Each structure stands twice: as structure tokens, then as C-alpha cells.
Length: 437
Ligand code: GLV
Ligand code: MN
Ligand code: MN
Image 1 (cartoon, rainbow, N blue to C red):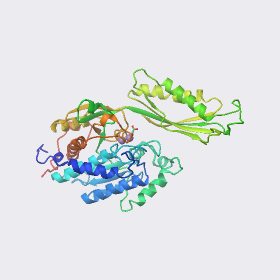
Image 2 (image 1 turned 90 degrees about the vertical axis):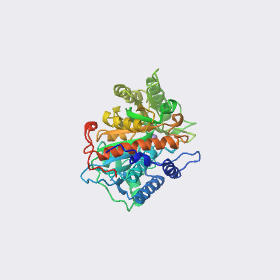
Image 3 (image 1 turned 30 degrees about the vertical axis):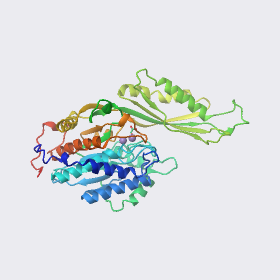
Image 4 (image 1 turned 90 degrees about the horizontal axis):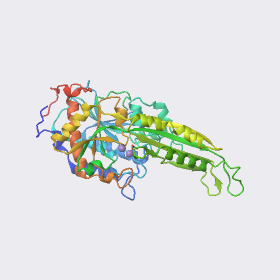
């Protein structure tokens, strides 16, 4: 493949088209303050998936959905025996999420594929645009369910049985979404992947601060998540004495305070979050009978993360007092580094396109984490205004979003044209079967 600028797929990336599709998706589950609420497997998520399939149909892409609800749109390659190159992210959002987290990666892949088609390139391997099921883990915990099951890191049946706060299981919610995608065929869960590239907003302020457009993601910091259940006893707020009470809320507060103190570091690298705190029965004149709370703990050094996470259970138990406590670890993900081969492809593409770039560690989690052990995986970041994310104020300029899609188009066409994709692929010749006319 020659780097002929007139046929280079990236030149067909259309900033306005990409911005238009992002705006259309942002209308699905739009919140009052300009964000989105499109929680996994909700009717808004189903509507977004339907929209993606319809756009794919108009481009001649083949949709499919696997048993855990990951949605794929395929640009067929010329060699049916070649494993597909995957690119995407997620369509679900946090309850007061932004308009770019996740959906940008899906639509950047869509834009890149549309550009590849327009350039006349005939990739050897198929390119699958993918929308992973439940990345955020807001409605069903933990997150990244779709990519984890795809990668064989979690059991399908265990994940299908997970219920949301109202008791609706993933299996039931998935069946409802499938209803609106009746025309989309099933895809085998164990299908191979040759490589995976995910574009995403940075979700931090670094690129913007330094006036850079592209982040070549070096890896993802580790994360351990837990759910904690504290059981006390409901009692009358006026008649029960302090000595008699088993106040689940006071016990839970003592646990959170002890955890925050123990996980405090002067350098401000440890990330400790209790984002959910459900008190039952939540009545002003009843002593709380139970509390369920979540713990999200992150650190870039896996050994430190391991040691800090190991403190969670003993600390909760030590502060339970007269209440009972149950600590369940939901997910354990150590820090990882993406292969130099893919980082090199991304860096080279950014340089060819004259886009200012630098290496950057992702402190947020991504589906790419689960693809990393499965196939060569990489990520492309674009700037996030002020680093604001997981909130309605999330913003990235259309020009930066298009720049990321251009890098992605170049990387995807390279990957899909190679004879084979391995961790040493930079030394491999490009396929002569990949035509660019
Ligand atoms: C992803 O959404 C994360 O919480 O890191
Ligand atoms: Mn995301
Ligand atoms: Mn997110």
C-alpha cells in the first residue's frame, strides 16, 4: 500500500458528517443540561443501537449481535479467512453522562469505515465497528460486561444473571433490546479478532493543556471494584435506645471514613470513590436497616493497587460494630501496557497527518482493557475540554474529533491490509491483495 495522499482514506473523513451523527446520538436520552442518560440496555440504548444499524444498512455494512449484546457492523474484506479488525467503544452512558464518552469511539470507527469505502480501498480483512454492551457499569455492575464476555474473561451465564437496582436482569433487558433489533442476525461469541483500536476522548485535561490533538495511549491504569452490604436492624427513631440500635448507616459511614483515611496518599495518585450509597428503608423516623455502597479504587502501579485493595475487607469488618458486613469484589483489573507495535502505528499516522501528539496513560477504564489479552490492541485519545467527563459538560471540538477519526482511518486500513496481525507486525510486509484503487 503506498501512502498516496490522493487515495489515503483519512482524507475522506468528513468533520461535519461525524459531528452530525454525534449530535443525532446526543438527542437519544438527552438531558436538560446538554448531556445524555443512555444507560445500558435501556430503551434509549436500544434506540441508539437501532440508529447505528440503520446508518450501517445505508452504507451496506452487515450488522450482527452476539449473545451478550455486543453490536457489530461489518465492512466485508476481500479475504473471508482473515480475522476481522475491530474498532469501536460503547453507546451506554452514566446517568448524567456527556455526549462523547464511548459514542465517539463508535462513530469515529463508523466515520473511518465510511472514509475507507469512499477512498476505494479494498481491505483484505473485514473491519467490524463494535458497540460493546454496558461499558459504564452504572445500571448493571460491574461495567465492561460485553467486552469481558467477548474476551472470555467473564462467564456469559453469570453476567446474564446480574440484576439492576429494580431487579431486572441483564438477560431480560437484553431480550427487550433484541426485540428492536429483530432483523439483526446473531454472531458467534467466540469469533476471532485480528486487532482492536478504540478512539476515545481523553477524559483528562492534559492534551488540551499542552495544545496537542492526539494521545497515543500507552496503557490503562488498574482498578478494583467492590460492593459492600451492611446489615443492621430497623427500629423506631423515638423509642429505641442507642444501646439497642443496629444502625447500618452509622456503621457504613465509619467504614467509608476509615477507607478514605487509609487510602489517602500525599501524592494524590490513589483514586478512591464511593459513588453509590443506598440506605434502606430511607425513612426519616426509622433507624436504617441496611446500606449498600460501591467502591471504585484505582492506581497505576499494580502492586500498590493490590495492596490497597486488600485493605478494603478488613477495614470494613473492623468498623462494622454491631452490624454485619459483606464485601464482594466485583472486578479486578491490573494496570496494562498496549503493545509497542500498535502504539507505533498510531504515532506514525498522527505524524503523517501532521497532528501534534504525545504518549499518554489512560487513567479511565475502557473496553480495550479486555481486548488487550485477545489481540494487539491500541487506543487513540482526542482532547477533553478541561478534562470534564462523566458529567453533562463534557466537550471536544468537532475538529479534534475528526482528527482522531483520521488517525483511526489510517490505522484501520493499515491493519486490515496486512497479511497477518501480530505483536511484531511492524516488521511484516503489507498485503499485495490490498488494493487502493
Ligand atoms: C469508565 O467509564 C471508567 O469508569 O473508567
Ligand atoms: Mn468510555
Ligand atoms: Mn465512561
